[in-house]
Length: 285
Image (cartoon, rainbow, N blue to C red; front, side, top):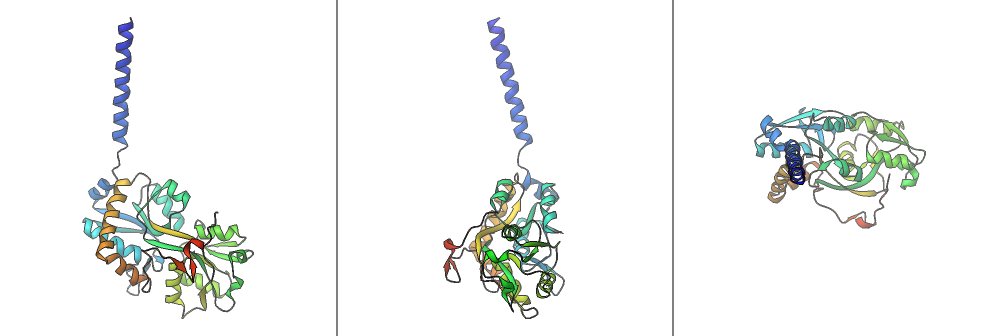
């Protein structure tokens, strides 16, 4: 009887090992193999965010992340397919497997890093805001966000920080920079919180049309990149390899400087307006 029980125990343990192996095999990361089999990389982008992903005067979709991915997919022998949508729809599409990555330059916030994978950093930046030139929109510090109307997409970290300080959110769904700036000048909103380089480039592009400026308010140093599903480790590693090739060849810097008016956000910076980056306040939300 004792020998029978021992044999039964060994048999059950063997079944457990087999089932575990089968389950592990089922859970294998096929993210890269699937993309290669399909022959294309499907990405989510707004098509309205200058200089990240937008349409130029020739009605061509271009931008910092778009040009990077054009180079990456070309080198991988893949087609690049862009699905245009608002920010809120991007995460849902990623979760549902409708896109392979989000190319909008999402910040690597703690909650996102916990739930998703990110590429190597492509943008080192920090938070600030667009205000009216005539009166700074009454904003000299983050405390001045209180009682003001903040314009942006509902799910961004910048809007959440604005609300934390008492701003009233005015939510836009995949609107162009011009719509934001028209509303800011018309005082339908008071400020637009976003990242430093995006704001700087947008003001350089639209500043002659609209009396707007960057607020002298900075917070939350950030890193941003492509955002992937949590299980897409193989795809992340492969695209990171391609990005590093672009970095080493100097091509990544060329693309960055093209879209960011000679600046290179792909490399971290040490200070902003004379303030060391380590002294910039970090605001939880």
